[in-house]
Structures are given as structure tokens and as C-alpha cells.
Length: 257
Image 1 (cartoon, rainbow, N blue to C red):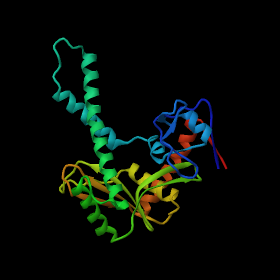
Image 2 (cartoon, rainbow, N blue to C red):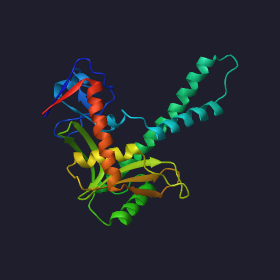
Image 3 (tube, rainbow, N blue to C red):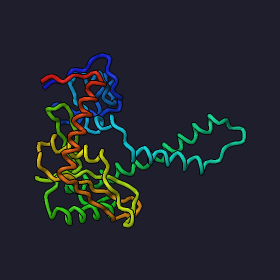
Image 4 (spheres, rainbow, N blue to C red):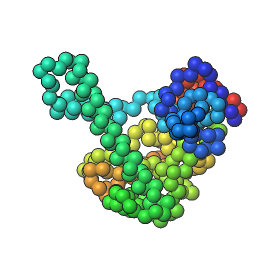
């Protein structure tokens, strides 16, 4: 299968890309010899595939949207407005402050994911020991002792690529970091279900169990595993497949067998 990208595409430059063989292609070496983010031009030339998460972003994400709104409100409540500061400048500063909170949360989540990857690649527990030990114990309790493969990537013939956090012969797991405690355990959202449904199809594991492992960042060691029912995963795949068609139609790309 080849992917053709038209010259009037409107795909975000931040889109993650994968090769047809499933190798991540987030960056390339520019003409100046320096590493840079992969662009639409690169994707056009190399016939790259968009990521699962890029496809899912076509749909609204209520949980994330509410969280972002909360951060804006918190910033507005905690920041002091200068008497000579215009309303527009204050709003700009509030938005910048709220985004900083999101950036720090994303960096922390990335660091915990990296620590989990290192552990399951046999490097031991070097960072976030309580979080990773909690993850190990929760997965053992849910699925027993098994050989997990970390960060396995793929390129699907249907026109998308991706990389799952953990997978075993009959299980696909995606890790999420979140603030929660034992009295307020998180539940999965539609975007989580779609992501896992697409991963198991892309990995060629159509009958695999699918679960989210929620790692608490406020209560180190607390991990909550949500395993999706098969009916939910089937629904998730239907939703994702529809978004896949929408993404290609909106972006200006076409898929050729």
C-alpha cells in the first residue's frame, strides 16, 4: 500500500509519523545535518503513515478539555493582576501559566513512561520506583507473570501507524498517568478504547485483551487497571475506523492499495 499526500494538505506539523514497515519517523536529518521534526514534505516523499493518536485527535476529547478548562480557571484564581495590566495581557498571561501546568504534567508522564519502558526492557527500576513497582504488581495481579514487550511499533495496511506501551501474546496495554487516589479511581474514556482497538489491529492481534494501566502521580504505587470488554473494543474500532476515513478526507491524503 502507498500513501499519496496532496499539496493542499492541512495536517498539523506535530503529527507523529511511521514508515510502512512500522518504524517511528518523528524526526529526520535536515540538509544542514541537524535533526528536526518530520514535516509534511518528508511524509509525502517517504510515504509515511499517520499515528493512531493523530487520528483520534480528530474527535473531541471531553475529559482532556475539562482538565484544560480547570487549569485556566486555577491560573486565573491564583495569579494577581497588575493594576496597569490590560485585560488582554492578563488573559494572555493566564493562558500561558495554565499551559505551563500542562507541559509539566506531560513531561512527568513521559518520564514515567520512559521508566516503565526501561524496566520492561530489563534495565531495572532506576526512576519512579514506587510507580513502576505498583505497575508491575497491578499487571501481575490482572494478567499473571508474563513476558511483556515494551514500545512495540507497527505500520498497518489500513493506513496508520503506532506504538503501544506494553504487549504480550494476548494482551495490549496502554499506560496513562493521572492524579487520583483509592477513593476516586479513574475510568476509561472513548479515546482510550479507540486507541487500544487500533493498536491491536495494527499489531495483528485481533483477539487480544485490551487494558489501560492508570498510574497515580499523586499516590505513588497506586495503579488501577481497566480492562475493556470486547463489545467496547469493537465499538472503539468502529469509531476509530470512521475517524480514519475522516482524517484522510480532511487532510487531503489518499490511500492506494
